[in-house]
Length: 467
Image 1 (cartoon, rainbow, N blue to C red):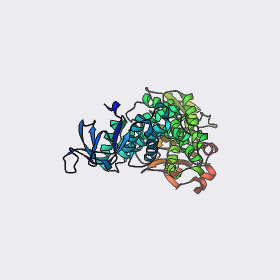
Image 2 (cartoon, rainbow, N blue to C red):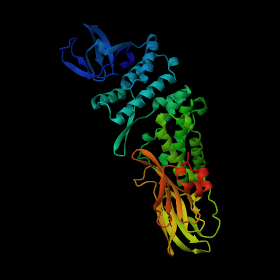
Image 3 (tube, rainbow, N blue to C red):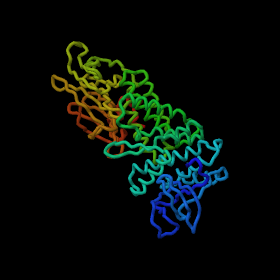
Image 4 (tube, one colour):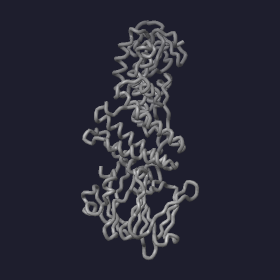
């Protein structure tokens, strides 16, 4: 039936009553919401006579509560102007999608370009974010979600950290990338399609890797050089995040060369961000992307020989998925000083030993964005292992890395960054080697003389903590 419509009444007000007759006192047939389509069948006494195909019932609605639209080519310019206006009007997403649907019906194929799909995707994505935030009236929000679903706009929901996240499936944005469009349109599409909040947490590792490889491909379809600097920064940040995730996933599957390349690209993308052009609203994303890059940056750092005498840390395979660490004296490698196996990803390029051989440190990535520092240190005649976590919280996002040792080996320098209470917090600490308890701590390395004197050159040259 809809295929034969030549004129529609588009509801522009929420909770508009559909009356049984052309009178305000007539019984209410249904409650209408902005963005709904009604077939126009006539006009009477200030009411539009309509038929509601969703509910399969006729009725009357006040003419000021709807806009009558003729679905012909002559209406296209007016519809385009309204869609462009509503695209940037918060709270009018369902209405904007209704107008976009009308424009798709009225315009000939030659006039349907990426601009329309950019607007449609922007409206759907913003409605999904509204649904996630729960800041609007639940009744109207639920009704708007039903309205857009009637147009075939698909929103999906995920349970994450005790709350529901609603996401747009991105069909309109895929069309933007396929049809072309301005660099800004392509960037909006790529960022919306690669939102980390919209990754299904129930995905298995193979599915997640395939998704991240697809996300990387999507981001490569946007040319950073054609964007304003502050928008190019957003592209670089998303690329850094995606490549950091791939570095972990590929390395975990044994694809070490590809993992190293992904790590290099993550570091390069983060370095491409122009801090002077970073928008205020992007600063938290910059900090989070830096932590993700820091968690997996050792994927691209090759293992190096540790000069001098002292214990040697060797890695070997244990049970399926396990890596075993074996600390042994270089002069007597058959006798193990300490052994431990882990399902975490041990980075060989992170192994460092103090000059006296009284401590050996290695980075172990337990999750995609969570890397700990394992420190083997001498205690009396034996050796012990202490794991330093990025923060005293549940593993989520963070890393801790070795910055160096004091000349006498009695102090250990570490840098920590982690997501704590919704913010990225950084700390630079001087730890006692025997207890690994903080002796000094600061928010920046420049505030600690020990970091200026004892931090190693390879750490200063490779860390993202001093960005």
